[in-house]
Image (cartoon, rainbow, N blue to C red; front, side):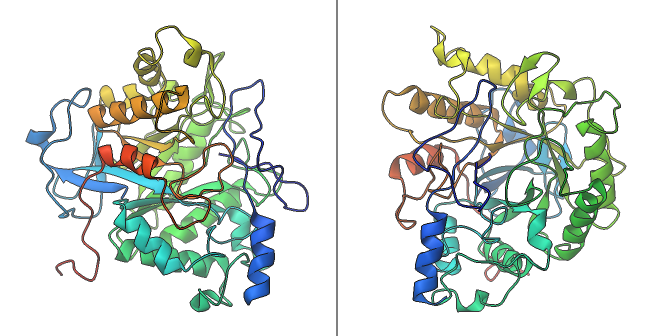
Length: 428
């Protein structure tokens, strides 16, 4: 999702969710400036589960089979419509996003209120053992100084670069039994880009940053892969051979570059926002995959990814249908779920979310229907988002950054599985 910010990097009106005539998802960050001021004054899983193939049933309609527990063997790869571990057991991710590295704080949001350890402890306690971790390439620049952190509560983060703080987050998450997907969310702190390159980010820099990250985290097998570019849209095409716009071609190039230095990583490839003349959510349309699947030199490593949102983000016409929500499975299947159902490849719903999960609002009905659909089809997901400062969706945490939105956790807990063992407890 995206966040409108003014040129001084101050959030626009946090109480207003911006919508446009073109379907899109965007988030507004709430209270960053106030939080940074306050900090200055004081000083300063997806749950994964593995299943035996015989227990899984068909990918289009099976309920989750008997979990194999926490005995996932790395590295992960793919087999038809599933992610599998090195022993061939199916692995399903049911996780959460935690954003901030892609913003002007160059650090995860919420560290102005509490410690990194307490945040990760709480996240792991809720059963999320995969974290999708967005970043901006600008974070790697020497001039990009992390801020918005209460260093009295996070003394070990003082003086670190954004990359070094990312190291702390990754180690803390994986030590607690979570897997991590890195997400190139923006070229810079100000806005997302339609394409994988922009005025502030060349294609070569996009590629070289991915190669550096793949090398950096190669020794941590719970860092499982790269979400190459967040929400391709607008100019982005799929499979037309145009070097300037063909996202399929660019993703292939990036995946092969990453695998030259780290063959273990899964390559998560999002869709675009349209197929022919039909528009959908940013990054949410995978219809082009059927004719033009992504084929890497390293086989069995591609996971397709889509984003899908509800009426709280944009009031699409399908939410107004007389048969809503019964009409939704056909829409999901057409745009993204068919990829797994037809065994073309595994699928991650990398973003979905909304403020309302209980009651009779259309947004609550939509979210619960989608959760049921994901569970029925054993589709992996990372929920948007842990943060409460996502303007049009809210988060798993309430605005105090400490207490949980109990209705959201009640919904998410319908489809979670046993976590991996924390590294300190895992058998050697």
